[in-house]
Length: 294
Ligand SMILES: C[S@@+](CC[C@H](N)C(=O)[O-])C[C@H]1O[C@@H](n2cnc3c(N)ncnc32)[C@H](O)[C@@H]1O
Figure (cartoon, rainbow, N blue to C red):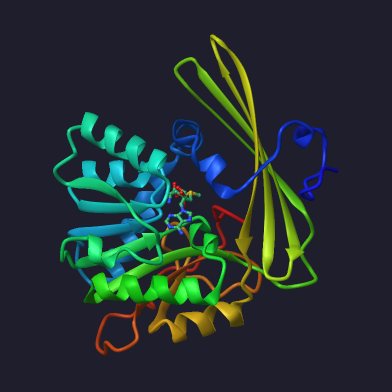
């Protein structure tokens, strides 16, 4: 075991503490996570259409990373804005959008989730989305409430915020592991991730070991970061204090599900002050299918 709590030989090399390190590897992130994105966007489109009762036009992604969702949405004709705190992610995302000829309808700005509303040029969004636990990078109530306030400032009154996160139940979770791998051209990326619940109160430690193989050699990149943990009660309480209400809970295909006690679910949030907005259709089929994330 090394000093940061990560276990195993994968972490015996250089271990750099801090979430930015992994996210500095924008291309590596993109290679690993782009496969399957179009299908995820199919689900996202379904969720938003049902929630607002029409096709959205202008869409926001806080903490968009390499812009994999934005590229798919841009190609499908949406106007999209991403924000991300990491300048390397922002540069990579904008370059890919530009090369695809999407620069006029899709762009990314560098800003934190906690403070970005003044940077969007007065645009009002039909929907915002934040999937695969990214919102858990906000590590305090204060940061989350600031973020909710910013999102509410830029959403249209009937707009929705679609948030995917894994819920925790203290005491019953065990450490777990995931392996991801993907290839793009002659670059092959392998990631071994371990998740250590309760590394500190309300925190989950995520230890990542990346192996990047190219014709010119092999790189190993270790990084460690922490995500905030939520029980369902803690999450619902913060949503309410943030001025939102839960309009629906769905899986990543858009099927309504029971609110889980533990595990991944997608919450459709709408401004609590707005009455008459469509709740997520109660007629939606229930599903017990696979969910991305943990
Ligand atoms: C797991 S990646 C998700 C990227 C993208 N949403 C996706 O699903 O592919 C998390 C991203 O959150 C960004 N991030 C972390 N904390 C942030 C913050 N406080 N404000 C804005 N971006 C943040 C990181 O730079 C990184 O690009």
